[in-house]
Length: 132
Image (cartoon, rainbow, N blue to C red):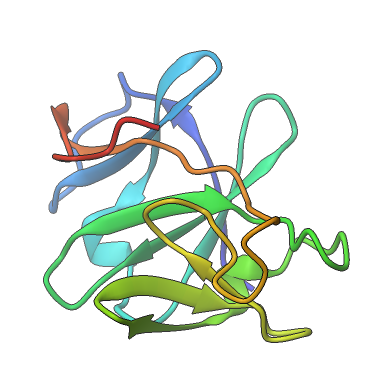
């Protein structure tokens, strides 16, 4: 499993844009966009001890949701398979295969269940359309 520890956004610039997520303490640098591979996620340990699962699609758009599978309690969503259904990007949990929308956190298989969604930006430019 790939795990990144989020740092403050004042971290030195990397060769490709830095992916940052908005956490309880402000914007946190997670990794370089070049560290992400479409279809695969990374787990980021946040300062409050929680974890985020960070993904990038083939177009280079990053996403971040909570890493904890709400059905099992395991921190595994970063290891799930990504795909899309009705133009909604999702990750399927590697354990019980429930699919979670990467934009809203909603479980596509059980709308009563969801995971947290983090706002994402690259190098200080907020990613459009992400208000969560």
